[in-house]
Length: 457
Image 1: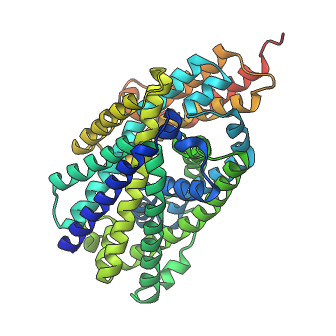
Image 2 (image 1 turned 90 degrees about the horizontal axis):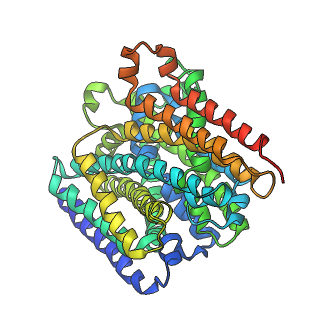
Image 3 (image 1 turned 120 degrees about the horizontal axis):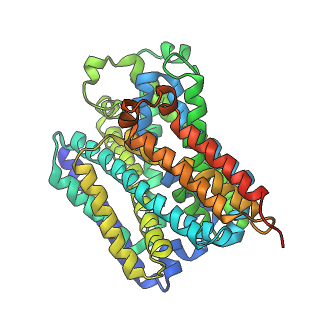
């Protein structure tokens, strides 16, 4: 597999670089570069939205989680799908009508410049961890395919991702997402069909253990993930970036709805793969390999290579979107510039920092993503949602609204990075274990007050 994989990988990277280079001539403005001209069709938006959300966490991460806790591992992605459907119902049209280019820009147009800055800062800082998480997963994938850890290949592939993203911007990302999504779906579906249709093994235990809750996943986990994970899909920067590139409100709404439905189906497929491995592979056989990586070794070579590139595509499609969005936000909403050159430089810097974090080995994909989401969700979701609803009506009182963002984000930071210190200082474990939810509750209450007490002229 090594020679075939490396040959295909080289071709894959050449195609992506070529797309970026060819798109240079088509980029006439900052809007073209940062939001793909804001004229994308429903098909393009659905494809790029699904490619964005189907990343390392929703493939490699989900199957590992399912192997550990069983069928309830489906909830991570199922809540994501529910978040998209709820977005379609309540937010998509409202957001597109405001005609923002980024999520902080949306906050700026609904609340003010201070809101734009602080939301931008939260996203940029948090999303370095998200990008690093995707790169960590990619390194594991390359290590498996090559047969040993190879830092040189990992760094080269990472730099190519960063390079084509910097060159072609959002326009190139949308195009590569279409190709990547098709490979993702083909690889995962082929793996499912082979494992359940041809590999044999114990499938009766899979059918007998379809449960939504168990001793490893309790109601409190359900409640927490609904808000923390569902919230990011409902109103996250990468998800909403696909709203901003859509041609109009109708396309934005229908695309979120269609993507949510497809994602529900995908969540079942990837969970069933994890379940098959759970009941057919012992921990001793699995060793240090991830569940989905082990599945590759069971597949015929052609199917295995297809799945490898499906997983690689999943990682790339999420990584490039995260990099371009975080970089655009830094330049447009923090530096207050609309400069393609500055965004390109920021892409290189952001990607470089994430690569360094990945090389240092600071956590796996699910740990890094959960940490980032635990800061973003309590600080942003409820305040921004209520600001959108209040836009053009009562509006919000900026001081209280900003305090909601700060209080929620602070709870997320403390719970994510300072939990051990706070426990040693005497803070009860019951509070620390639910600090993200507590932060969301505080930000919700303050956000409601910010709308309710708005002074009227």
